Length: 223
Image (cartoon, rainbow, N blue to C red; front, side, top):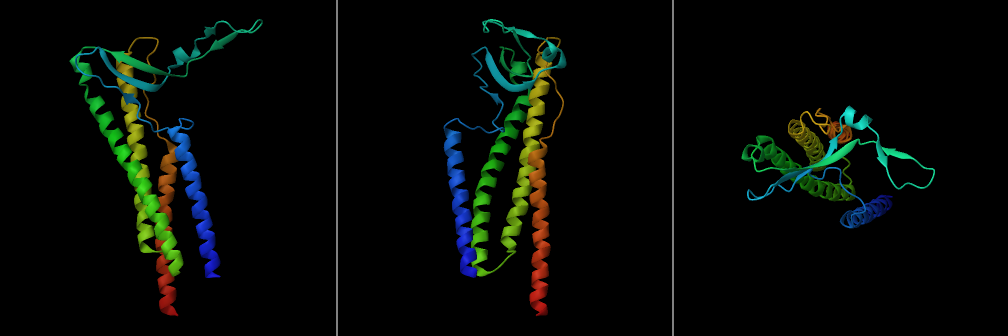
């Protein structure tokens, strides 16, 4: 019976590894992308007019409500476009703008995000391997796996908050630079609920597993 369980675990792990390799291939082939790709880029040298780019800005209601006619449509077809998101390339020699503290914070938050992502990836691999070893030994709730789940959950929450805060700082920066123009974006703080939800789920699961482990130990001592 135990051998069958181990075989099933190996099959599941093989499928997971295959899906992961396919996703990596699609990612590097630019077929799929990450929603957490840093948005502020290209902070230029001081001898250039080009300063930086901010992507995926949310258009204001005024800009979004305007109809932009699309030319060269097929005969009998009339189309209009509405702008909901847009990118901004900013050019300036003003050092006060180039050295805006928000840019430094955005870059720092993006670095933390990347570090968290790498750590999560490594910890997931370690957790899966730890689960496999514990299953072979007959342990359902190994202490190491429980702690790793807790850390992964915390890192997911931290990386999500960093991404959301960095996005908010980008919006406020663009809001100030485009003040009183038609292209002034929305600058509200939004939380990516999906990442937070999965992070909190792992944190709660780790505590449930910890309780299950304690119950298992108490049961073994009773027997």
